[in-house]
Figure 1: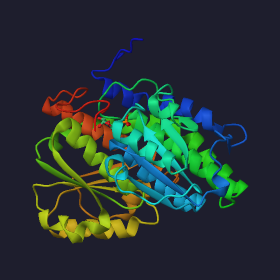
Figure 2 (figure 1 turned 30 degrees about the horizontal axis):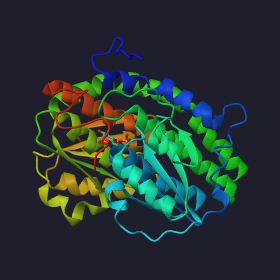
Figure 3 (figure 1 turned 30 degrees about the vertical axis):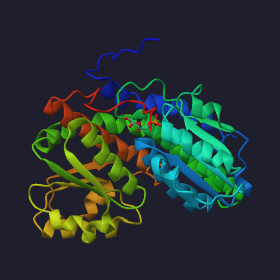
Figure 4 (figure 1 turned 180 degrees about the vertical axis):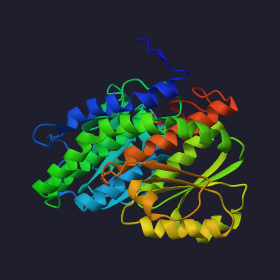
Length: 368
Ligand code: G6P
């Protein structure tokens, strides 16, 4: 069927702005808004008995998986082995049928992800698919299907599929935690309440930050290199921010764990390479701010993406500070995805690139 852009200039813009509504719909499949519990998911995977999880995916879906790793380990105390599918499939990773494997794919057709799935199947693991296309090959070859329900995604650079993948992974990690006794009933209620609030917060953020990000993107479009930093779940987000920038604006960007700054990228810091720091006021905040100080001390320009508490706590001078509302850590990765998507989008628009069909990229990569 046909999908159109509505009032938007590009599919990517439309897909960014439909996230509040789409996420709310997707969440409806996984959480009960009345009792604030996670609904029972596909029973083919019994999280209570697992010794570990393996996750494999490509591109943006892989970065969603990396956020999921932090959640499964923290909330469900489930060790996670994760790799990009093109490496995973050839690693000869020793696995056991006491583990389960999750494959994340918007299209459900990515060749390397499918090959990783078949490897895990041969090793006797139960297979779960986190997919947008329920009729896809990856879905068909899986024991359990966890649909992300994002609707058709046309922009090559993934936006709404990413935040929906995160919403599903958050719900599954809470469900896994309940099954394993590491998340209490009260914790579940509190976390699910935060998830339920997410669509409203997303609309508010999208409305509020747009003018500032558009103006900032004009400045950003003059640079050739950008470094993105983050810690904890903000680290995969930093990589996703960098990926979005390179994909559609063709600006060279790298995403780094903030703590690795001093092990290499610090040598590159000067006034010509802005450093975008993603730092909600969480338990890593002070550490990340000290990395920011290292950047500032070397004349680096900082774009600080934080929340109200974080903005109040930091005294550093920045090129720009994007202040989001204070939100619980379980929803922070989804909320902090919005400024990085908009920043890439508006920068690409200023540069005049083909936003929905960037050069050399394909929406779905069905060859190795
Ligand atoms: C391509 C797309 C990316 C996507 C990746 C994985 O590189 O351009 O946006 O993240 O493939 O695709 P999948 O369909 O498996 O999520």
